[in-house]
Amino acid sequence: MANKFSEILKERLGAGELDYEIGEHANTIPYSLGGMTLASLGLLILTGMLLAQFYIPGPESANQSLHYLSDQVFLGWYLRGVHFWAAEVLTVTLILHMMRVFWTASYKKPREVNWLVGVVLLLLMVGLLFTGTVIKWDQEAYEALAHFTWVGEKLGILGLPLTERFAEGVPMVSRVYMWHISLLPIVTLPVLGLHLFYIRHHKLSPLPESPAGGRTIRFTDHLLYLQKAGAGVVTLICLLALVIAPPLGQAPVHGLEVTKPPWQFVWIYALENLWVPSLIVAPLLIVLALVLVPFVDRSEKRHWRDRPVAVAVLALTLLLMGGLIIWGKVTTMTHSM
Ligand code: HEM
Image 1 (cartoon, rainbow, N blue to C red):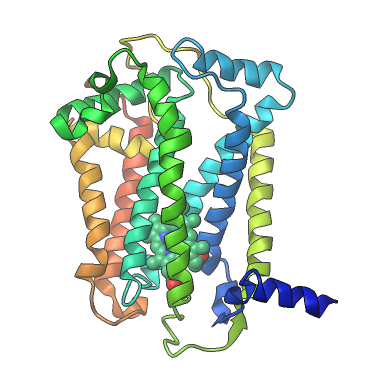
Image 2 (cartoon, rainbow, N blue to C red):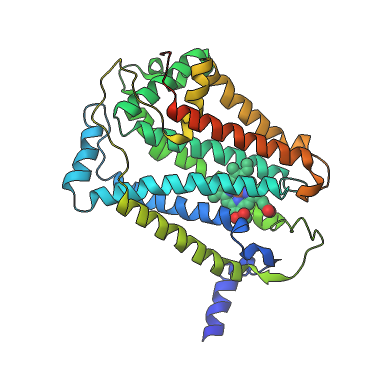
């Protein structure tokens, strides 16, 4: 009977495609960070669909509907908390995932394209995080949007769709909500599908210390490991949501500039304090640098000991970003939009 069932799974549903060999090192945390990111993403989609049942888009209603959800709806505060903390945990595992891929030189031949697909995923995740911040429509959200539309204006015709002028009379917060729950997720899903397709196609990169490949396991065994890692991530998120409530201020006062962005964006705030145009220039340079990684580093060396420049670049990037985040948190803004 069990045999018949597995035959059906294989023959009719193509589940045999998942039954291939991969390196034993797949069943370690560093090589499961992408899978853990996926677990948070799943939770975000689920809680997002529930949140959307209670959210009323529009400048007059958005913030109020979230206060109502948190204060009046049964477990509404918890639903919001899980969505918020899933995004926080996703940010952390995503950054660690990228660092692992960089550290083990897994962006090298033949995985260059999947690195680029990853960069697109990163941009989409940043977009989702940013639009999520805006639609709670408190002071922080209002100021984040003001910076965003400022960038849109500066980009001229290219930035037009990001400005109020594009659809006059339609509140920006309603449009940003559409991007958050429709446009960005619709683009994310196929890009994610492509990422997973290439992971299957190239298989997981071998350990840099044994490029010929060592012992192997079945991918289905790795899926069992990922289930446990994913359950760990979900548990952490649920616990965090239980003890720390996500920020939610009152509806914004227009024209004021008094808040700081969340930590994921605060480094730009720090840079902007030095030179306002860095709001546009810094993200562009970072994306360009990420895109160039597999084209610039074309050597076949994969072990970190043989890649002093790559290690130095990673260390400097982490120091710089860490420093800017701390500075952004403590500094006071001396300019205004
Ligand atoms: C939503 C965001 C992302 C998700 C859900 C995701 C998911 C995954 C998963 C499940 C794997 C399999 C191996 C592992 O878990 O380490 C993987 C591998 C990979 N990812 Fe991602 N990823 C994301 C973003 C990124 C980003 C931002 C980059 C780089 C810029 C990237 C580059 C790669 C590469 C090159 C591999 C192949 C690694 C190897 O074979 O060792 N990914 N990703």
